[in-house]
Length: 151
Image 1 (cartoon, rainbow, N blue to C red):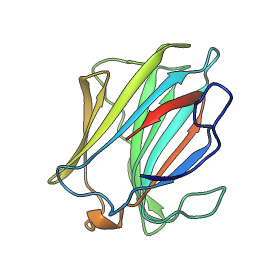
Image 2: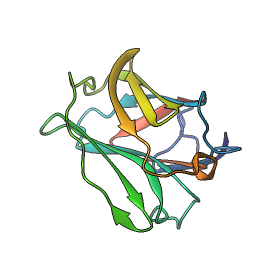
Image 3: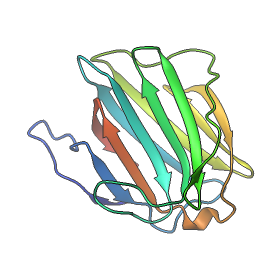
């Protein structure tokens, strides 16, 4: 994954982060994010997008956006197709993120869906809203976390 980022004194990648996914997504491919939740977290976002957009906002096609909210212990996800946001999905079996603790998110691209795991436990499936998986070429991360590894 080619990356556009700053590295902090602790060797962590600075957030907000935007990185290129070489060759885009396809069934069998996965994105792995290892990080640490901030000591006083509010929320953080992870998004897979088509194109890099501007420095402040993602492009009009977002294949998957995760919003992790600590106040109400929610993991919201949605997609944006041609500038129009779809319905938000909320149901999760557990809330896996703990303030000031490390975590690992794996986003597996499968036929028809993304399957998302946190610390090895499946958290949810998200049906593909965009049909051209190879166009999903950018990873965005922002919010109350720091990144220690991306793969």
